[in-house]
Image 1: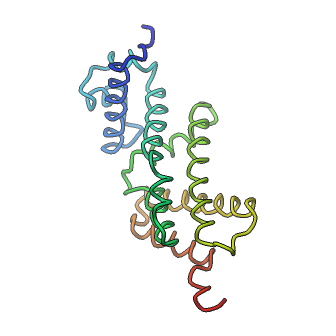
Image 2: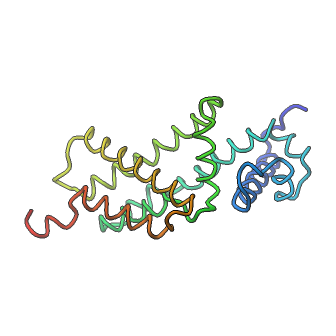
Length: 204
C-alpha cells in the first residue's frame, strides 16, 4: 500500500503511532517491541501502522526523530533564560541524561548507534540531534566562562568531550549501575571541575 499523504489527519495518526511506540519502548526491552505491540499501544491494528510506516525500523527511526524534536522545542530559549551559569548547565544535564533506566529515547539511541552502520537514517537523525545539543552546550559553557572562554574551536571541543562523557553516564543509568540522580551529580562534578566554576570567587 502506498504511504499515506501529509494531511492533518495523517500527521495526527503518525503522532499517535509514535507516541504509542515510545510508550511501548518504555514498558519493554526494545527487542521485544514489535509492530503488534506498537499498534496495540497506539490503539490501532498492525496493518494501520504499516499504512503510515513501511516497517518497524521506520517507526523506530521516526520515533527517535520525533522525540528529539520535542526535546529540542524551546530548549535553547529556556536555557538562555537561566541567568545562573551552574543552574543553566544543570538544566542542560538533566535534559540530556535519561530520566531513568527505562527512558525510551535513550533505548532508541542505543539501538540507533548499533544499527547506524546498516541504516543511514539512524546516523542522520543522530547527527542532527547532536548538533542541536552541542550548540546549546557551547552557549551554556560560554556563558559560564565569560571572559575566561577560549576560542570557539576550544569551546566546541570541550562541549563535544562533555557530551561523550554524558553518553557514557547515560549507558550506566540504562544498565542500572547508577541512578539518574547519581549520574547528574557525577556530570555536574565533572563540568564544575572542567570549567573551574567557583575558582574565580577565590581569585584563581
